[in-house]
Length: 135
Image: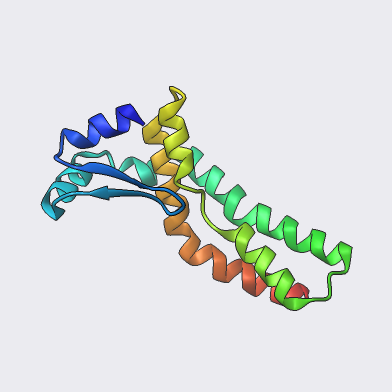
């Protein structure tokens, strides 16, 4: 976290921790835009590995969850949908933070988070439509 705070401070940004709520980057909007402009955002879309991870997390895991719930014969629709939606969400931001904390590749983690979040706009409705046909 120290390295993340140092990197953000180079752009006059601050990482604020709210216990029980999460983390927030605080600073001038122009500084945030400058930070984002200097990041290698084009690599988000050029990494084949990122698409593989996102496909597994956004399509395979939810479909396996749906099949598993069919085998368990869970009849409560609300419970099934809640579990399915929870398993259809994108990779969490904590992935990027843990990458930084444990000497991993922070930028790779951030790319996976960004890509899976963007792809989830399509994958969540797709998974819900497929499971609606199955159930």
